[in-house]
Length: 257
Image (cartoon, rainbow, N blue to C red; front, side):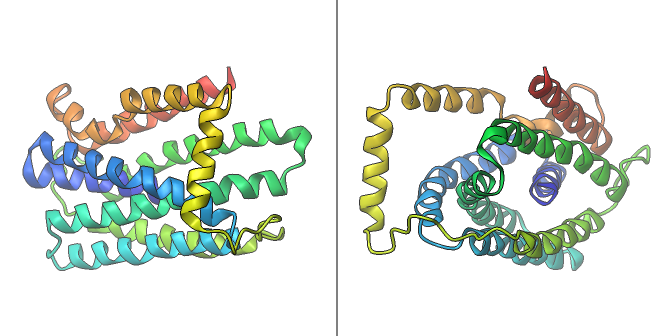
């Protein structure tokens, strides 16, 4: 959670400081949208076929490799805009690809009678990570200075460190990660079609998905915080950190109350 959130803040700020154009952040959002939908669909299929702990570890390993690559390039001042877009596309796909496995493992580890509380705690934990992340960015990007113009390379290195920790974390889960009802011999695309038919025929799920899509479209604005910080508050990295933190605090209040 910290790894992904910190990457999103760093790349958005880096792009906006590099170009000064809001369109670069819009392209970043379009790239994420383009890869997230197919990655999520295939992630659900593979979560029913493969060891979920290993699948999550693989997605985290991808994060470590590509965030480390950006860090290496930035350390030598060789990071380019297209590098950021390419890494964003890959990591958006891999992070979403592992989401179904995370949800399935939660249902496996937690007793059914407290599953709803576990789901709520997962969301709260996500938001707590979103609060911690901007403070990490605030310190490592030198945002506490009046005019922070230093390179973001320290933030990149801290992000790489958290990515490394995330690689091993799923393997410490004691519960088996293998699917109880394996579908190894079933065609992957047939599974996708069957899942789509099930959702369409369900009396509740289509409405929930439409609602979720609508909420996501109008609420996914965090990557625009560098623009808000500059245009609304005439600030820089410090305002981005504060906006990100308060956005998460509001989400936690919504979860609790």
